[in-house]
Length: 282
Image 1 (spheres, rainbow, N blue to C red):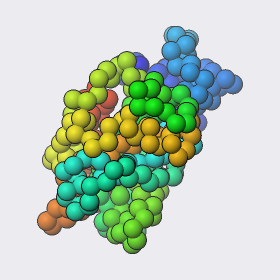
Image 2 (image 1 turned 90 degrees about the horizontal axis):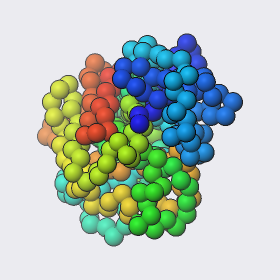
Image 3 (image 1 turned 90 degrees about the vertical axis):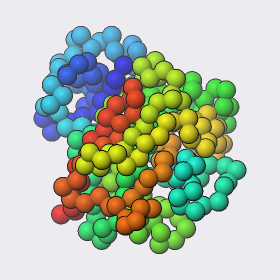
């Protein structure tokens, strides 16, 4: 099943995507499940999907996509998690994942613009697989990790590189408003199946700039969930952006920055294609 968060008639909602339409479950079930996160928290996605026949439908072309989870409790990002990216940055090998956070308002949805801030031109792309937590937990064991996942989505973990490098902490460069693309859908694990060999590709204006398979991660998804849940309780709707492969713009000669008018795409087999334009901050 594919679920989307969206805006229609100036109201936020969510629903089940079927073909080129979305069943508006948010409008149908507003009192019980006002957003996708609340449905995930109730472990009710399968039950709710059965209600789709009663819901009003909207053409996908008529909605405005929101980030898959517009209101996560937290967004945890795994840095330097592909060997070719670690090498291109010159970073040392580490025994544990590198983790930093993003704020909810740093995200934007499918087919919306990623905003290049007025204080920088160093806006970089980072295509990633995102996981959305379904079942809460602390000290989750690797063997149990996949049972805590509600679904997957594409993520473009856009980075303002000069601000990222002001200090050793990544936070400023990772949290400018509307710099992280997240979408188009939450795809449930039964739709995705085994993820290891899935191909992840980032394209800028049609040119392939990143190309890998998910099994090239240094720290796999069970290890990420185990580690993150050791220092924080993972909650339904939490997002983990699992890391980007090599090929980022900042490590090219000359650097390749995203600029106004560009189109960037992140595509992952069986997960979807996330497309965003780039616009300058007004």
